[in-house]
Image (cartoon, rainbow, N blue to C red):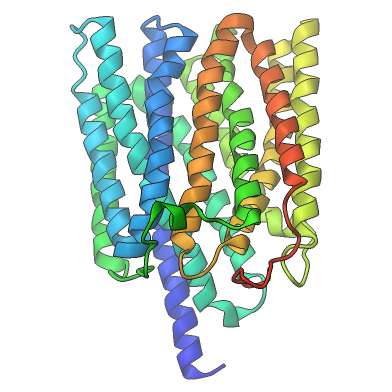
Length: 423
């Protein structure tokens, strides 16, 4: 390996580590925020649908934020978009902390929805910039050997979700220990430290390239990206239809404390993240990066669809110790979902072009946000209509759609598409 190539690989690894660490800090507070809002307002007596409504703008904002964020990251660089995302999150936390208990229910809900919307924009600006950085750094480090892209995507995604799990636990703990307002101030302070690290250590021009000049060019994606984006809508809708409201409220109704609910969701998400990080060792690899990985995406989607069917059956039969059947079933769900998500996260970068990776990633995660929005909405509605049974049935149906959509994923890139490093 030449000195220049070695230096480039070392620089790429350093940049990957810095961006990953920055996103860890962001994700920790983002996970805590979800538990803070959900548990605080459930304690105040809000209905399941109202709880879901509190998160709707948060999820909806992500659709536009991902599309615009990918374009902006391409035009202005990843460091600038990470900075904007962190500042936006700090602003959202500050606004949320100003919530006045004396306000009417309508005004309180409106204030929380707007503040959550700001945090939703922050999350997806930061995510798009961070995921785009992986594509760029993996391309720079390709001389370290094959498989760098899949390994880095898997580690980034898995460790990020493990950190979100710690955030869920932190949210429940801070709510018990500090209360709603002081918890938000503590999290905003942590993000100020992360912001200083991004400004000081991420290269200013990282990821800067020639952006699309028109909306038509921005939305002109290849067949692989389009099919994968559609499958992502169904996949994440199937998770959030039970994750956002159904399971936390169900467990709380079974006598669990806030810390216990937050702790379970934390352990679930940490385990899910660890499996994501190990996905390159679970999924069979191929020299071209697609011929084995695409069938794996199809098989794991079908296997995942069967799990909520089994849990829903246990709920319908009202088996003894139902809460533990639900907990165990969701453990299986988490394993299969983690592999699915990791394979999808790899495939989007495998299908994406190198020059406008941020735009391709932004388009894909806009679909991800759309799935979360739909899942969040249905989580409140289905739980209010028929409890956890309806939420799990909705999850199974969405996963069946996800599997059907993965049948359209191409197993090879056409000549006019830019190949990515092989996994």
